[in-house]
Length: 468
Image 1 (cartoon, rainbow, N blue to C red):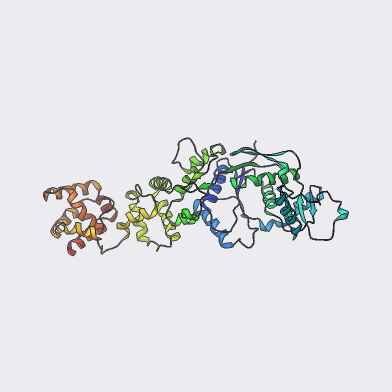
Image 2 (image 1 turned 180 degrees about the vertical axis):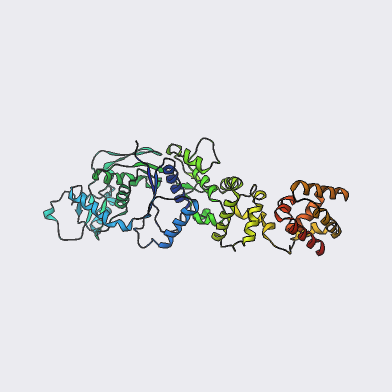
């Protein structure tokens, strides 16, 4: 039996959940969930100045919106600092790390001279092999003893084998002079203790892998499988940043993109499964693998996102869609729907969802079902009403009163009425749209009648006739 796959997402809580971070979380979630594994969440909150509870909450909300559930408790890296320090002291006791008493001034003086002479600025501490008997009673850091010869090979599932000469690796600091652990040590100890088997993260961490492997090897721990994924670029080919528009996962929720469409789009951003563009969560979990991740940066394209979102809205369950739209309205700080509006929205969903790419578009089409009498027509709708006499609308009422309220009966009644008036139904459609919705672009007249019901439909037509 193979060991269980364990992945993790480890954001720093210094802001919202960036869309690049959301994709990293998604890749980790898909890889674990598709293999019956665990997906863990660790908040890397060691930077006490920049880490905030609000940012942690924003990350959790963003993951919640995307439906990326994690296993177990959220781990705080900061709270595990004593454990990180314990590992540094273990390496010190084993002779694989050492106390370095060099001051910042000494190190900077060395680097300035090296720069001036065109030599490597990689600092080699004179304390690496010093006799402990010569140690002064002074502040010191603890450094790992980096290998001096040979090559470190990062076997990466996305980037391939990446070789780094060991003489280019410095004796990395593990514990600062105040006894606090550095990020590089904390990451390795946390990943090991959490049982992480696969580290899937942005390729801006690729160089860190060689330095982190020094700790794994010094401790005799199993090195995880590395998969460093290319970053996301904007449409202009430059690294995605604020100038490209909305970046936080919650901003996309507040803009009205459905979570399923966003998951589908983010999965396709840098990963492919043949030519498949649209797929369900179930298919994504089944298909996702590291071999399908490309080496080149993916480009974020809002039109493609909207296209996929429209396809997901079209196949969504009506009740689930109504629920997600209500959550969107909270995120967008819109007034909530009344229970009656919510019911009307769900009844209307069948004739709204086929052509909407976002929730604002869908709600725009749903306006006829959400609004209440009296209907105030916009300019175009008012012109359509003016094109027919109020008498025609008054005459139409008895025909509709006697029709059974099904699509076929309504079509039959309206077509028969148009024929009797020696006109085409198309000539009646504009005024009816105006009477029922107060606008000229709406779902079909028959769909609106079915959603509104007999009484409301007749009342709106009567209002329009009276106003005319």
